[in-house]
Length: 255
Image (cartoon, rainbow, N blue to C red; front, side, top):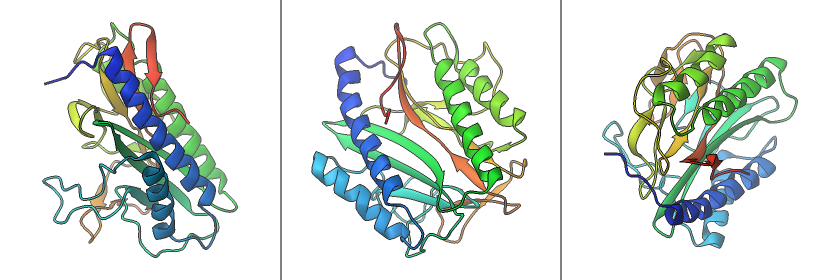
């Protein structure tokens, strides 16, 4: 069931989204060669504490997970696509890092992700990240009243495939509200004009995930959480929480 949010609820979700935006900004600023992923998790925890927010990631355990998630950010490096668990790994020159973060504030959730490089970037990584950001922007632009879910999926997929990148078939965005994951699912590839009609009050987490090697195959790491590319190529992940309104899409996690 898809819950339509009131304008008042969307304003409350904006407050949660802004906490997420501040956390991601702080994490990216702190990320440097020699900094550990656990240290980045501590940075995000500090932002959440200061805002009086909690983490929907910490302790989260969906059906596929053997253990609860132990952190407030997902930190995925190089060939890790999503759901990376922060560890003592220290960032190296040229690493490609994807950080996913959420916040729960006043009973509402926000969810967003960014990808960036540390130290000297590889040109291929710059292009991959730029394409992921373009795919996200295309998905957001299609999130308008009167369109359908397939229009968002088609917009994202067209940019990703046009760049020569792979797409995780079984993972995409999702509805969001009082819980981090709600209906409806938001695919990253699809046919325009098909699927659920978009209405004022829907709030979606739109999140392209791109595989540089061009294949769609991935596997779970031994930790049971991290999803990695099968071919060892790098990956990028971008995400915003977006409210669909009669005035157009509103990005609630804008940084």
